[in-house]
Image (tube, rainbow, N blue to C red; front, side, top):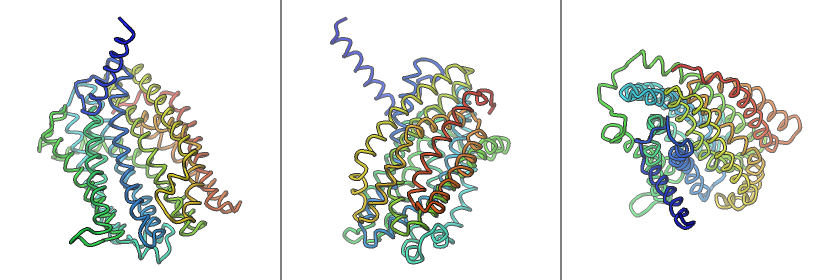
Length: 475
């Protein structure tokens, strides 16, 4: 075989794999065959899915960053996103439980049980989120002030917060249903739902913020409306494929009848999973408040700008690490423990390469990236410093994400919960407070505490991974 023929065959295989990943190929058995191909088939749509989730905040940030009183608008978007991380935590925790159970049932070749488990997770989501939405609508202004916003800034932006928290059921369903699809090995549907939601958001944002023809300019409120409508359309797309798609999961209306045994099993997995992400998100809320109180409105806006950009890069890495959750869950279900371990190492290697590349980009071009999102010079200075300091820990973030998803995919949700509690609440928060207040470093002290704590959390994750408790968990 000639060298040219070999090259053509190589590129043909790559093209075929990419096509399978983007189209969604549920015929591929993730419990056998090439682990590299399994990771790629899952990782490509998962990375694109998480990129699209991060685009929501960046699109809002770009358009509101060019409004009058942009520092108020940026701060409102950032602080609201910080509060929404609690809802994200609930959504991710439920999504993670759904992924673990669905993947395990698929690995056991029982798609009916997988479908029923997924529907019970949706019932739980509806029950929990109704309370959160009502609370957010009533207390939106108080929430912003509690987060460190000035009264003037809270008055300017509380309706944005009301709409975003009030429509949070869409956030939860978007994460949860995507988790169900990922557990079944169909990451492409999850990706496509976020693409559709984002395209709608990108189209609607400039129209609803700045106005167009008979449509009035809603300003900051328009950003919330555009995001909520976009996410709702994404959820409708997911629901259509749950009921009428050609995938391995076949949903029937009867599956929505409450099965309290299954609900109890899901809550048992989800509760510590939700707790682990609530612990992390509440830590970010505390840091946001600490920056706001030591750096003022401009310091807060700069930090929130940097954080949104950092999340744009981190969420795709989280998407890649999600491949470990599906592969570990399905392979443990098929009693393929060694294959589950190999899947973790392969996913971690790819994530390290990705995050190292992103670290170089943010260190080299951080100032240009920041300038694109805000024209306020005081905000720029803080944002550039924050982004460059936080990006130093990107490689450790990448490894830590894979380990967290490994534990969660196996159903061992208590281990990462404990790691997060000690890493964030007993290390990161005290360190940030001491550096910011005691050593008078202000926001810079908070920025330094973030990569230091994330590195410590990753090292703890490696220790518990090697102990191997995750291999013996039953779900």
